Amino acid sequence: MRITLKLENISFNYGNKKDSAINPILDDLELELKKGEIGIVLGPSGGGKTTILRAIAGFVDPFRGRIVIDNHDVFNSENQSTYIPSEKRQVGMVFQDFALFPHLNVRENILFALTKGKLRSATKQNLYRLKEMLSLTGMTNLAEGSVQNLSGGQKQRVALARALAPSPKLILFDEPFSNLDSALRQVLVKDVRDMLKATSTTALFVTHDQLEAFSLGDKVGILNKGNLQQWDSPYQLYHEPKNIDIARFIGKGALIDGYQDGDFVTTALGKLPLKKSVNVTKKFSRRQVKVLIRPDDIIHDDEGGLSAVVVRKIFRGSDFLYTLKLSSQEEVLSFIPSHFNHSLNQSIGIRLDIDHVVTFDSTETSLTF
Image (cartoon, rainbow, N blue to C red):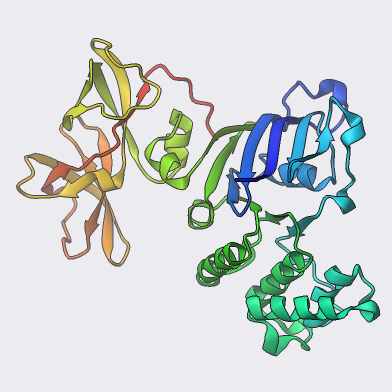
């Protein structure tokens, strides 16, 4: 499948380029998106996520590296003759503050992108595309309305329609849902993904919201200290994180002590087969490791052969998130249906249902987020 976006060895730092090797904002960052894929860069605020978008769009130039859009170099620090300016990269951008023109109505805001601001010179093709975008985003009935009277979700739909209208090779999204309430955000995330897939549009989002990232992305990358530590499917990130930082950052879970002996690891929860492991080479004898236990690995079962004590619980409607203390005094988490309303300090039966046994060397250094 055709590659729409490729970043190679992107390094960036504000200020003096000679100092770019010291605490870089981005450090040898690499990622790739195929046509029609949706990618998410996930990380804490101030970690360089927006800088990635600005570099791709051509608003800033990296200190080092190569940016490829639709198989064409648009930036290459080793070959300046390939440089393509921002306005010619065919990249759309959607901002968290919508960036709509308040003096133009919905229709005119979208048409602006199709005519490069020359609204009166709109062609029949422009008007047909406008009609398509209004229909796609569900804004047809509000086409003549002022954007100042729209809700946050409606404004974001207009911003998306405007970005999609010129059929860009790539659309960049800078935390586009951060100003919306959680209920609206969940609906819009689904709708935006559906619209991007319906148009086979390649997109790259940046966000600090894990649920948003997992709901939207075909590929998700974890940005930490300027490095993209893992670029993978949401499923792989959750079940097979490549390092202990990602294991702690993604989802909920606990790291408990274990001792690896060949193809098994022994823990307070029993002896677990290492069918799949991360960062630990097999066939070690009594090697100390950390074992990642997710809440969905622990099943409530009075006949399960194991027990744990309830030390905390959070009611979530259909289930509780229980914190359970093991005989080793280590704590793990478990999602338990809400009709099992156990008391604090109560001992309950549990069993393991682990498909991905993920282990880390206990001496692994944490970079922390």
